[in-house]
Image (cartoon, rainbow over all chains, first blue to last red):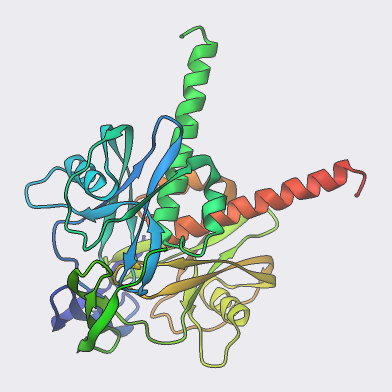
Length: 194
Length: 194
């Protein structure tokens, strides 16, 4: 295992409403010195939801994405609030953004964004046993909700508005998980379980 | 199709060596007004490489990631230089970071990072027909290179140092692409082609 570089000095070089930039002076184990800049994570973290209905369809939203000044298709997601449990936050965001709630929620994975210059990690939650439930959110306009078969991710990849790395990773990981469950279920049934 | 909000005003509110933050005053089609902040993309874009050898193994690197102050396993990647072709940039980064070059390179997909507040898109290149070739890069210390079977992504997902969303998405997309090619090849052989 390599030895992490020593942080010789660190200071905040810019701060805005959303972003805080830190400069670090580093010395690597071999003596090499570098100045790095990184975005410092603020808040309690974020959650992304892969909500799958009984027909095997996943719930996606199309929303305005300021970074690209365009509409983008992605999984519902949002920030965890003070004192809020991860799964509760996932269900709240799902209800606010898609009009569905889930009776079954479980942590699926954690995804980082750009570890070279960001500390952010997104918690991904798998949600099932869905029911209609709309909560009022703080969106400036209603989001478009789309349902897509989870086993047809390649169709989504062909769309111009579907390109967000974490959503794509989360969909593939959910698909693998559900396949595994399916196989385990079948093995069990074949052994005379069901 | 929804109508994009109007940008009433925009200004740079912070700028550092690496980051430029822009504030936008937006008016949505329904009249709702919001202030958004976003990171403005600089440079000519970035490229990520899925390099697969003849044994079906993908080339990964472990490098220090300043955002997390820790070592992270991910696909090789880097910035495209002025006047540089995308595939040439991919091969250069591959040579610098892994010690392999590729005789066959093709664009695989584009992945965005966080479209809500970043405009960045990463070009992903599939590289094959590898050969040993080391180029000197600007890394502060040598990177660890690891080979992993591309059809065992789930093993990687179980590791603590493998969590970067775009790398995971790119590996699954490459796996799908190679499976499709494999099936087409088999169909063709079954039809008496080979």
